[in-house]
Length: 555
Ligand code: ADP
Image (cartoon, rainbow, N blue to C red; front, side, top):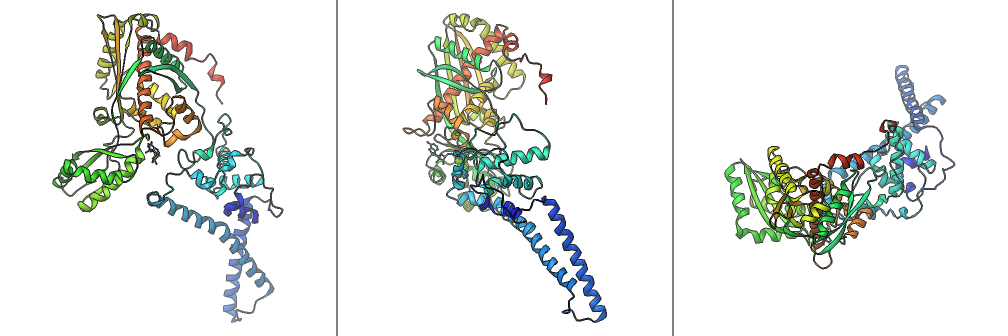
């Protein structure tokens, strides 16, 4: 019982004891057997004592006169009661506290000065630097695995109970395998710093997925060379982008211009009438009020700087699209904090304003939306290159004329026929997503980040090709989120944009955005050339088809 209690209730016992021997007083009975025994005992003695009590009342026997069997029953009653209270009562109490923690999460986030510190630091997961214990290291682990399997220890609480993130992942993984009866062999556990993701990147980890990283380049962009890391499992993609980089390099390189840099968040607020909603719209869009609003907004961060608030009305509802610069961060957290300050101020000025949600989808995050395509979100970049006619022939194996015609019929007309929204390109999202995964960006933002129009024109009397990509919503950062993880930060380092820019805050993230656009330019050139030359199917058969018989690989 003691051992069980230790494993269930004493987080201290777990901490930093991966090799602890089982205590000699440990009960080797399975948990459910002892629970069943104490339950049975409890209800049996309660029944016995109640019937004795009734008997005594019936025969007018004084209640304080107890027989030996009654004394034993009273002892058994208290013993089983204490056991059941200890076992279930503390668990219930913990779950109650944890629920309260969840509910008050927002409040905590607001007031806790440690909110931007990864929990790993708070929990001190330094144990990661020591050799990792095997999957089931000792009987303590076995007890915990069993308690996760039978539901008495919540899987999500393992990290905080154990204070050892790797051990928590290992135990959760083993419990999951037992619960599902499915093997996780092939999903690696070892070789990853689970402390680095805690409280920031991923909850309930059981391992990590490996995605190969290939290098395309050098990409010659604005006079500098970049080796572009791409994490992908699509054969041909890196090779093709590499070929595009070669064509650009041999033609003297590409150049880029950053047109805009501002992350957006658009809360939705409601009034009693459209007239009142319009009053707030006019207030927010009045230049005379901008100074005051930006002072409020800017209080939330050293880097978040209010740029504009654009409003859209739907009846009594108002959508405030707030745009701000965010330094080297992608900026979603930053803009949200600033918006919160503005909303608090507006609430005082417009007491009848009802804040429905801090995000009202007019932002618009991770959804295809015309507002991003037209107004931009994150970094808006245009990138261009002139590819010499002979390079088009020798490297891209096609002609300027064929490329221009294909671009017009596929990327412009074909996409128009399909009713595309920002999809006037061949495969921008392929390159965007591969670079995003490699460099720790939010891969879900590939939706709007891949908005791109690819233009191709013949110039110099039809000899050379002018190619450009215009991408209004590249959402990238070099600090925060997944960028701080070891592998992703190594890829950022390769590009020379790791972390915060010391000289000019925001310069690293902006440079990364231009690299993304330059890589897309290379990818567009190469795929379009392959299509124009009719090579696509041939090259995919060669590089994107496994020769293995996949029917034999299934588990
Ligand atoms: P996001 O806003 O992209 O979700 P986070 O809020 O997680 O990113 O990370 C940004 C954090 O990094 C902020 O706490 C910010 O103060 C800090 N920071 C340090 N240097 C910079 C910089 N150059 N640009 C932006 N943020 C920076």
